Image (tube, rainbow, N blue to C red; front, side, top):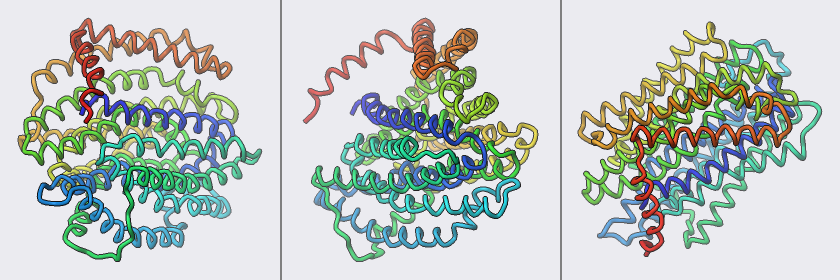
Length: 528
């Protein structure tokens, strides 16, 4: 499998989802603004986001896929029927747990909202009750997205990556429709309709995955729950895998709660909007790489191809740096025009835009580490080691908590994002050191040569964009066409400068481009 092509397929669909997400957030900023209504909805939306990261992008992919692949690839077994039997056994145990968890969270919505928000800063009992009602409206999404993740894990294992990658698009479309069709002059009512749309989108995503499975000949039967050895092994892996993969999201939950409690109304919205922009390259690069690397490395290790697994991880890290470093520079140095073009109109003021850009710069410092976590953790999960990543994730959460407490007062809305970036960098350092110490990852000569040159190329691009961004400032406050045009010019200029810089510095050569082109052209002939 071509790593770049597979990552591009997933990343392209994830990019489409994230672009639609930016459209949704732009409309949300226009109709709701930055205040208590937006903060209350985003607190309610934080729990579904957390579970999506833990299950859709974490536990099921990290724990389920290696075990499913092992069943399917076992030469002594029956192949796919064995894998589907294991999926049915896992579903039989997980479904009752998910139902009970959903009911419990509905009952405990008040303390859950209190935990996620810290009680907010200076709100009345009526306002807090409204925030609790929004949480109750979004909680059903947790069960629905967990079932989506199980079906998506099966399809990913069968190399049907695009189906699962396309599912989040339905979330954004549903919320966009709700904003266009059901916005209200009262931002509280618009926020409530958005909370309803979240759970509606979960049902649509589940229907999409179920239909796709049936189209691919996959049909799961409901079984009586049994804790057989396979299910016990799966459960032993799933919880630490969830915590390890969701370290960034858990850090964001902590950051959001402290911001809601200690900072002025609107601060949660600044942090959320900045995180959405930061998530764009993370979705395009990190999720795509993580989705492809885990089954690929698992299969190579299962076949005893340790050298091939290291080669795959080296190229994954190289690809991550190639795509991540310029995104980091652009978001840190050019956050102001980007935030203004996307959010700066309607109820979202110029001051709101400025504060969002500041939070974005703090978040984006950690962008390489957010993505490298996705590249390094498959080296543990493919070897059925979920305990080490969760141990390091726990340490990074402690670092994040301490960083929040130290930075939130002096830096205000920039403090929590910066603490998150520092914590993620610490996490990556520990993961990298352990893989090297165990002999499971060694940077090869190509990676060692290219990494510093890619960093220099990204720096050159960032300085050129920073020097020229003033030219675009008048256009990012104009009509939608002017705003999008200005962003397109910014992106295209960055791509041209970065591309030329990589060639001049020798970080990426014309021979590499020719090789990739030949591989892409040869890919259809390699299909069986």
